[in-house]
Image (cartoon, rainbow, N blue to C red; front, side):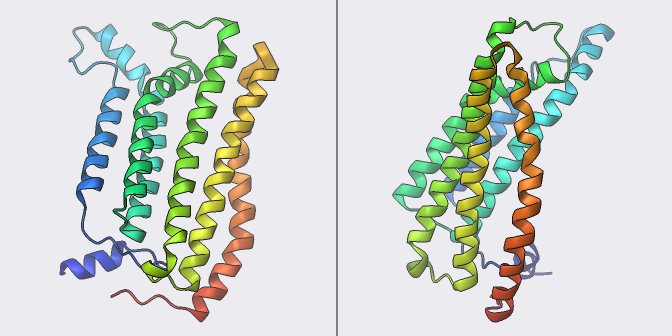
Length: 237
């Protein structure tokens, strides 16, 4: 199987990938994401006792959740640059801001989910500090998706130079809406945590409605996507 066939298998069904080779920008971004995953690991040393090993294993669920969230961000990042292959100054600046936010929020992310899974042996937080933690997480969550939304707005403005067809224009607009709606979940959770005070942990339940949103959005927008796909089928070169 040649490289072109492999690229065709990896490409999206309804979107032509304009970025076929990994650029220096993407290579640097991948290195940063890898470093962020490394920061999630409390210690790289081999445990010196069985008790230490048990402590490391108890930390695994929190690591798994954080790793999954970082993987989601990385996958979204890959799709954007594969779709448009942009290397503009604006795209580079927004990408740098995204990487900064990802690195800055690694420790708050790990701290929060370590508390969520109940492994608090080496951690402590006062009840009055919970709202601040939820606000920090909510704002960081929102920042990531706001940046992705701005990246898609930038791509949308370049739709003619990029040669986007009506289906791809629709999917670009859809991605803009999706990312800004996702950011709203984080903002709403942060605001709710501020007003809930010592019950700020309840603000985390806001994120449970993300699945409901995508179910409704997928049902409505999916029909429009299928209709456009029938009118403007994508031919992968």
